[in-house]
Image (cartoon, rainbow, N blue to C red; front, side, top):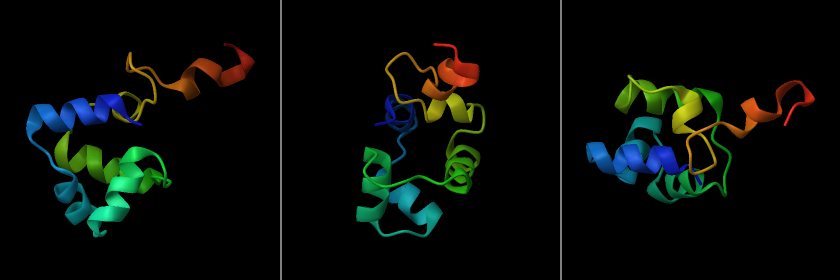
Length: 80
């Protein structure tokens, strides 16, 4: 669901279990959040970014398309 986050996880060797431990979740819940089948809160996004990828933006890490742009950004103000 978050291809940029997955790419950065692979690049830096961050595993789902690492994110689960950071967020104090069980591994299955973390897997569901990373797969997009469970909601990732803003606080969780910040914790993941700050804990593992401090040089990256939230928009980049949690973009939902392949080129790393935020779908929210492209639709703000009614502009596509």
